[in-house]
Image 1 (cartoon, helix red, strand yellow):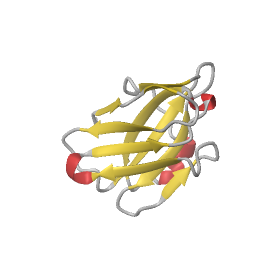
Image 2: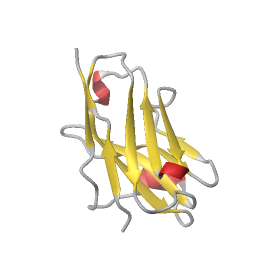
Image 3: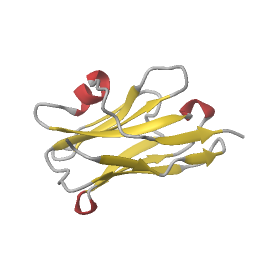
Image 4: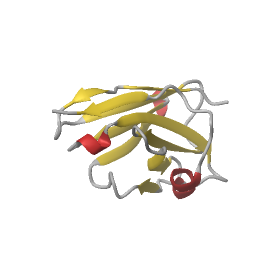
Length: 128
């Protein structure tokens, strides 16, 4: 079981930027698909961006494309989510995940992956 810990959330104003971090302790990210999901109040959890670390393939949902960027620092076992031009619709709890590739791909993880084993997540609130 991979251990992932999200951090970096907070209260920001519309238009602000925020960077979330995900610490993947004790394992290399090479050979994994890493991804960020979020769950807004009253809504289902959705995959917003995923990255095949070795292959470089990425997926971004339409809701974040052009504003959010996923990246990794393999030496530090970290996954990041840079969020720009935040809006109140981005308010949610954000979660990260890491799954072996293959068999997983960036698209499959973000579009189809479901599990009951999520971490605590980190709350992002965008409000004026």
